[in-house]
Image (cartoon, rainbow, N blue to C red; front, side, top):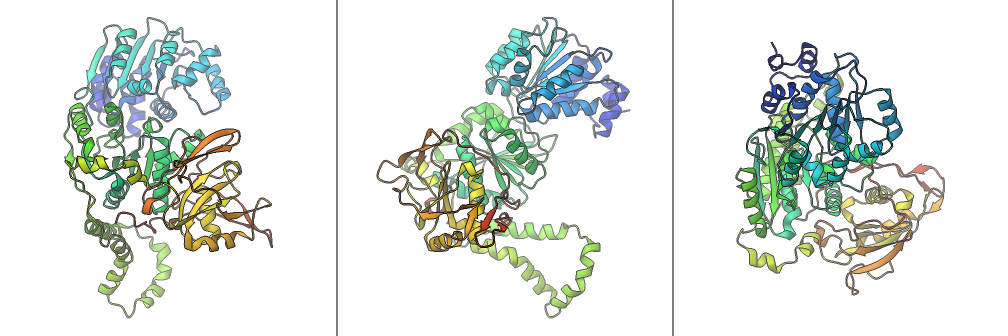
Length: 632
């Protein structure tokens, strides 16, 4: 007998979840399901993400719903669209053997008309984000007067995202007799207040200690100087060839900068932040779930509700402002009983914050050393050997080429073949890390750290980067270009490497970009015969004062009626770059194509003036080929 039967779950549901691979209840399921099945208690469940909370409340709800009645009997509120869809799909899968069961997902970024139509057809369980649910209630399109159960999932995240008022308004439309089930990873003061305001003598179940981290996650920290942070980050990634990770940054700008720098350095990476439309966000997440992205660079808010299996590492490029957010970040790995690693890259002044986090999560960090160049080369070498040893061979396809391959290797011994094959990758890393310096900083080296400008060290000096020339191009955001698109457009039409292009400064109807000075003539000549949708593409050496020049490193420009500041920056000696101004001026549209390393860029037709044939098709960057030498 399946252990879920013993918890009180009916056979039809157990059969469905058995097909989904449910064999043994997780601790939160084992503790919560018998209590919730009674339907007579308010409930507070504290457990980390990835521990099976959806089934812990979803299975009892399915037992308590009356499927003969076609009106809302249960409401589940959660913080993000991704989590909303995940919960609704999971519950539909649990209920697939139950006739007349109806679950509707209500969330922003999708057509509200379709959601209203689904509600009108009849629904028993509504899964919703607070903002869209409030909108539908304001339209008087749903009636919660007979709701018997309200679930607040990831309650702490909903409050962190500012949904307190919306939650209050939504709950005010539900009957006082309802039962409220609250699930959260942490129990801050605001979540405790919800329990006090909307619950009566709730049963409380805590898996582990309150606010603690997942026991399956190892926590490490690396101390580096601010100017070496990006270089150290890349070494850590290179030292883990099979990494599939989420990298957390504090700001949208930082996520964009790091993602763009990684793409230029040959990594499969993309950014996830609040400026992306829902369509763009979906595209990035699809690539990440398909594992065509190796690294997802995200802000705390953008990453909420992400549920991707087998994330090996969470990397804190910047520590969060709120200690509780560290728990949410690290909880993206080590899910469903698997192990994971959470890494923090800090400077010497942030060791105190590590101690605070240790107290909060109840686990001690391991101080790790940034790998040396030799360590990385050795790890990559044996990573490659292991990959060759375990690769799946398609005999049917490869057999036809074997005779020609064997002829090519006739005069080479087996040992030499192995040496040469391994050297293809080994030489590249050996050359890249030759003479690589030690990036570890002394934890007590606060005096020197204080004397450095961390922003300047980390992101490069102001003004045009050394060895680069700033160029003007008459294409911009109104042409549906993003910085990534423009980078690909330049490289594809000139044949130069992405490493030779520096800071890209997008405007409305034009843009500026830096290119290594030796390639200026090649770039300008290459674009002379090119047009874009019938318009000549014009490239000139920029005649304006260098951004970040003598006028305080800042200049103002008008773009589409909105004023924006354009800061200096560029790559200081190849380091991570800093895009200047924060938001986009009025009328500009920011759009991610999702086509970074290995995936290709969106196709913007660039035409040759002489034959007017379509060109400019995107090839994308080779996966893993070019690495910039910026950690020497």
